[in-house]
Image (cartoon, rainbow, N blue to C red):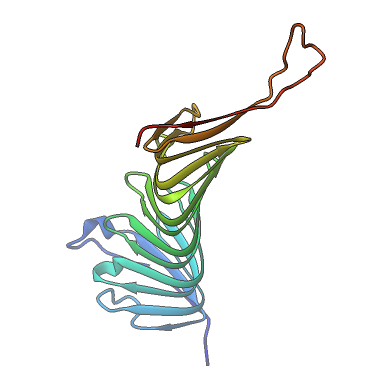
Length: 227
Protein backbone atom coordinates (compact mmCIF):
# COMPACT_ATOMS: atom_id res chain seq x y z
CA UNK A 1 0.00 0.00 0.00
CA UNK A 2 1.36 3.35 -1.04
CA UNK A 3 1.99 5.90 1.64
CA UNK A 4 2.30 9.62 1.16
CA UNK A 5 5.92 10.61 1.51
CA UNK A 6 7.30 14.02 2.34
CA UNK A 7 10.97 14.17 3.26
CA UNK A 8 13.55 16.89 3.54
CA UNK A 9 17.14 15.89 2.99
CA UNK A 10 19.75 18.31 4.28
CA UNK A 11 23.08 17.70 2.58
CA UNK A 12 26.28 18.41 4.50
CA UNK A 13 29.53 19.92 3.30
CA UNK A 14 31.88 17.26 2.03
CA UNK A 15 33.95 16.60 -1.09
CA UNK A 16 31.38 18.43 -3.23
CA UNK A 17 30.72 21.77 -1.50
CA UNK A 18 28.72 23.08 -4.47
CA UNK A 19 26.00 20.58 -3.53
CA UNK A 20 25.63 21.72 0.06
CA UNK A 21 22.03 22.79 -0.36
CA UNK A 22 18.67 21.63 0.90
CA UNK A 23 16.65 19.22 -1.25
CA UNK A 24 12.94 18.84 -0.56
CA UNK A 25 10.96 16.07 -2.25
CA UNK A 26 7.62 14.32 -2.01
CA UNK A 27 5.74 11.51 -3.77
CA UNK A 28 3.06 8.83 -3.30
CA UNK A 29 5.74 6.14 -2.93
CA UNK A 30 9.53 5.87 -2.73
CA UNK A 31 12.17 3.19 -3.02
CA UNK A 32 15.71 3.65 -1.78
CA UNK A 33 17.26 4.94 1.41
CA UNK A 34 16.20 8.43 2.44
CA UNK A 35 19.15 10.45 3.65
CA UNK A 36 21.74 8.07 2.16
CA UNK A 37 22.95 10.06 -0.82
CA UNK A 38 25.26 7.31 -2.08
CA UNK A 39 22.30 5.28 -3.36
CA UNK A 40 19.58 5.84 -5.93
CA UNK A 41 16.23 7.05 -4.65
CA UNK A 42 13.18 6.63 -6.89
CA UNK A 43 9.84 8.35 -6.36
CA UNK A 44 6.57 7.57 -8.13
CA UNK A 45 3.19 9.26 -8.27
CA UNK A 46 2.81 13.03 -7.93
CA UNK A 47 6.56 13.27 -7.48
CA UNK A 48 8.22 16.62 -6.88
CA UNK A 49 11.67 17.83 -5.96
CA UNK A 50 13.01 21.31 -5.25
CA UNK A 51 16.43 22.77 -4.55
CA UNK A 52 17.61 26.34 -4.11
CA UNK A 53 17.66 26.81 -7.89
CA UNK A 54 15.08 24.49 -9.46
CA UNK A 55 11.64 22.97 -8.97
CA UNK A 56 10.51 19.81 -10.82
CA UNK A 57 7.23 17.89 -10.83
CA UNK A 58 6.66 14.59 -12.69
CA UNK A 59 5.02 11.18 -12.62
CA UNK A 60 8.38 9.66 -11.67
CA UNK A 61 11.60 11.15 -10.27
CA UNK A 62 15.00 9.65 -9.55
CA UNK A 63 17.86 11.06 -7.45
CA UNK A 64 21.28 9.45 -8.00
CA UNK A 65 25.01 10.00 -7.88
CA UNK A 66 27.19 11.33 -5.11
CA UNK A 67 25.30 13.85 -2.97
CA UNK A 68 22.26 13.33 -5.24
CA UNK A 69 24.09 15.07 -8.05
CA UNK A 70 21.74 13.84 -10.77
CA UNK A 71 17.99 14.36 -11.01
CA UNK A 72 16.02 12.57 -13.73
CA UNK A 73 12.28 12.59 -14.41
CA UNK A 74 9.70 10.96 -16.67
CA UNK A 75 6.08 11.66 -17.52
CA UNK A 76 4.09 14.91 -17.39
CA UNK A 77 7.11 16.97 -16.38
CA UNK A 78 6.80 20.61 -15.43
CA UNK A 79 9.20 22.86 -13.62
CA UNK A 80 10.89 26.19 -13.12
CA UNK A 81 14.44 27.44 -12.81
CA UNK A 82 14.27 29.81 -9.85
CA UNK A 83 17.50 31.66 -10.65
CA UNK A 84 16.78 32.49 -14.30
CA UNK A 85 12.96 32.46 -14.24
CA UNK A 86 12.70 29.87 -17.02
CA UNK A 87 9.67 27.54 -16.98
CA UNK A 88 9.50 24.22 -18.83
CA UNK A 89 7.38 21.20 -19.79
CA UNK A 90 8.60 17.97 -21.39
CA UNK A 91 8.41 14.15 -21.40
CA UNK A 92 11.93 13.37 -20.10
CA UNK A 93 14.44 15.33 -18.04
CA UNK A 94 18.00 15.03 -16.77
CA UNK A 95 19.59 17.65 -14.51
CA UNK A 96 23.18 17.80 -13.26
CA UNK A 97 23.41 19.87 -10.08
CA UNK A 98 27.18 20.37 -10.52
CA UNK A 99 27.26 21.65 -14.10
CA UNK A 100 23.82 23.29 -13.76
CA UNK A 101 22.85 21.84 -17.13
CA UNK A 102 19.41 20.44 -17.80
CA UNK A 103 18.45 18.28 -20.81
CA UNK A 104 14.77 18.28 -21.77
CA UNK A 105 13.41 15.75 -24.27
CA UNK A 106 10.08 15.05 -25.94
CA UNK A 107 7.57 17.80 -26.78
CA UNK A 108 9.69 20.38 -24.97
CA UNK A 109 8.36 23.82 -24.14
CA UNK A 110 10.75 26.31 -22.54
CA UNK A 111 9.45 29.76 -21.58
CA UNK A 112 11.57 32.81 -20.78
CA UNK A 113 8.99 34.53 -18.58
CA UNK A 114 10.87 37.83 -18.24
CA UNK A 115 11.24 38.36 -21.99
CA UNK A 116 8.01 36.68 -23.15
CA UNK A 117 9.93 34.21 -25.33
CA UNK A 118 8.57 30.69 -25.90
CA UNK A 119 10.83 27.94 -27.28
CA UNK A 120 9.67 24.57 -28.56
CA UNK A 121 11.68 21.55 -29.75
CA UNK A 122 12.13 17.83 -29.28
CA UNK A 123 15.43 18.35 -27.44
CA UNK A 124 16.58 21.42 -25.49
CA UNK A 125 19.77 21.64 -23.45
CA UNK A 126 19.75 24.60 -21.08
CA UNK A 127 22.89 25.85 -19.34
CA UNK A 128 21.76 27.68 -16.21
CA UNK A 129 25.12 29.40 -15.53
CA UNK A 130 25.54 30.71 -19.10
CA UNK A 131 21.80 31.31 -19.66
CA UNK A 132 21.96 29.60 -23.06
CA UNK A 133 19.45 27.16 -24.57
CA UNK A 134 20.44 24.83 -27.42
CA UNK A 135 17.44 23.54 -29.39
CA UNK A 136 17.28 20.58 -31.79
CA UNK A 137 14.57 18.99 -33.99
CA UNK A 138 11.25 20.64 -34.85
CA UNK A 139 12.33 24.00 -33.48
CA UNK A 140 9.96 26.89 -32.96
CA UNK A 141 10.44 30.17 -31.14
CA UNK A 142 7.87 32.93 -30.74
CA UNK A 143 8.44 36.46 -29.47
CA UNK A 144 6.41 39.59 -30.20
CA UNK A 145 5.63 39.40 -33.94
CA UNK A 146 8.37 36.83 -34.62
CA UNK A 147 7.69 33.19 -35.43
CA UNK A 148 10.99 31.34 -35.97
CA UNK A 149 11.73 27.77 -37.08
CA UNK A 150 14.66 25.59 -38.14
CA UNK A 151 16.56 22.37 -37.46
CA UNK A 152 19.01 23.77 -34.89
CA UNK A 153 19.03 26.95 -32.82
CA UNK A 154 20.82 28.66 -29.95
CA UNK A 155 19.00 31.14 -27.71
CA UNK A 156 21.17 33.55 -25.70
CA UNK A 157 18.85 34.80 -22.97
CA UNK A 158 21.07 37.58 -21.56
CA UNK A 159 21.87 38.99 -25.00
CA UNK A 160 18.35 38.39 -26.34
CA UNK A 161 19.91 36.85 -29.45
CA UNK A 162 18.72 33.89 -31.52
CA UNK A 163 20.83 31.91 -34.01
CA UNK A 164 19.00 29.46 -36.31
CA UNK A 165 20.36 27.06 -38.94
CA UNK A 166 19.00 24.28 -41.15
CA UNK A 167 16.01 25.48 -43.23
CA UNK A 168 15.95 28.58 -41.03
CA UNK A 169 12.90 30.80 -41.30
CA UNK A 170 11.66 33.92 -39.53
CA UNK A 171 8.17 35.33 -40.06
CA UNK A 172 7.47 38.88 -38.91
CA UNK A 173 3.77 39.62 -39.45
CA UNK A 174 3.36 39.41 -43.27
CA UNK A 175 7.11 39.32 -43.96
CA UNK A 176 9.02 36.04 -44.34
CA UNK A 177 12.80 35.48 -44.40
CA UNK A 178 14.53 32.19 -45.26
CA UNK A 179 18.21 31.25 -45.30
CA UNK A 180 20.70 28.58 -44.32
CA UNK A 181 21.62 30.65 -41.28
CA UNK A 182 19.68 33.43 -39.55
CA UNK A 183 20.61 35.65 -36.60
CA UNK A 184 17.81 37.64 -34.95
CA UNK A 185 18.26 40.34 -32.31
CA UNK A 186 15.08 40.01 -30.26
CA UNK A 187 15.41 43.50 -28.80
CA UNK A 188 16.17 45.60 -31.89
CA UNK A 189 14.44 43.12 -34.26
CA UNK A 190 17.51 43.34 -36.54
CA UNK A 191 17.89 40.25 -38.70
CA UNK A 192 20.98 38.87 -40.47
CA UNK A 193 20.66 36.18 -43.18
CA UNK A 194 23.36 34.05 -44.77
CA UNK A 195 23.36 31.39 -47.49
CA UNK A 196 20.61 30.92 -50.11
CA UNK A 197 18.72 33.95 -48.83
CA UNK A 198 15.09 34.41 -49.78
CA UNK A 199 12.50 36.84 -48.52
CA UNK A 200 8.99 38.09 -49.05
CA UNK A 201 8.15 41.58 -47.83
CA UNK A 202 4.72 43.23 -48.01
CA UNK A 203 4.57 47.03 -48.16
CA UNK A 204 1.20 48.48 -47.09
CA UNK A 205 2.19 52.14 -46.74
CA UNK A 206 -0.29 54.66 -48.08
CA UNK A 207 0.58 56.22 -51.40
CA UNK A 208 0.28 59.98 -51.63
CA UNK A 209 0.21 62.31 -54.64
CA UNK A 210 -1.62 61.94 -57.90
CA UNK A 211 -2.74 58.40 -57.01
CA UNK A 212 -4.34 59.57 -53.78
CA UNK A 213 -7.43 57.45 -54.43
CA UNK A 214 -5.40 54.29 -53.78
CA UNK A 215 -5.15 54.02 -49.98
CA UNK A 216 -2.64 51.20 -49.96
CA UNK A 217 -0.88 49.13 -52.54
CA UNK A 218 0.60 45.78 -51.49
CA UNK A 219 4.02 45.22 -53.01
CA UNK A 220 5.82 41.93 -52.57
CA UNK A 221 9.51 41.41 -53.30
CA UNK A 222 11.62 38.28 -53.18
CA UNK A 223 15.40 38.20 -53.08
CA UNK A 224 17.93 35.39 -53.32
CA UNK A 225 21.43 35.74 -51.92
CA UNK A 226 24.66 33.94 -52.58
CA UNK A 227 24.92 30.32 -51.49
